[in-house]
Length: 169
Figure 1 (tube, rainbow, N blue to C red):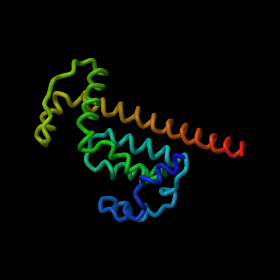
Figure 2 (tube, rainbow, N blue to C red):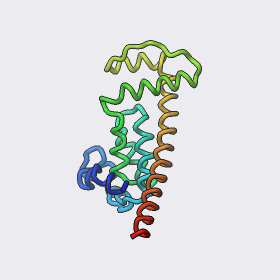
Figure 3 (cartoon, one colour):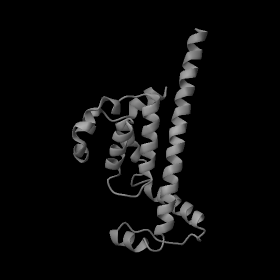
Figure 4 (cartoon, helix red, strand yellow):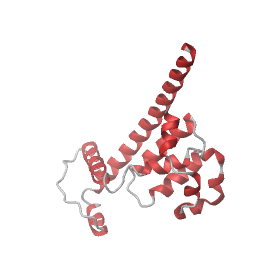
C-alpha cells in the first residue's frame, strides 16, 4: 500500500533528470538505485527529505539530491519531501523551530514581526538567530528519525497485512 500511494504522487524520472538545478550531478542521476521503490530506499528518502525541509538554506532541493545520491535513497521522493516547507507552511514551521530552540536554550521567546526581506534575516540573526537555528537543527533530526522509523514500520505492517490476506484466501 505505501508503495502505490507514494508512486502516485512522485514526479517522473525524466523531469528530475532535466531539472536545471540538478544538472550538476550529471551521470550520477542515471544510477538505477536512486529510482527504486523499496522499504529501505523510501525510508532513507523520508529521512533525507524531512531533514532538509527544516534546514533554512536556499537550494534545499540540491542538498537533498546530493545526500540522496550519497546514501542511495529514492531521489524523487527525497526532493519532493523538501517542499514540506513551502511559502504557505514555512512561517508556521520556522516559528515552531524558533520556539523549540528558545525552549532548549532557556531563553524567553521574543515577539518579532516577520518581514520577507534579506535585511530582516541579517538583522534577526543576532537576536532570534541562535534559537531559530538550534530549533531548526533539532526538528530536522527529530523529524528525519520519525520519518525513517515511521516508513519502516508502515511498510513492514503493510507487507505483513498483505501476507495475512493471502494466507486467508
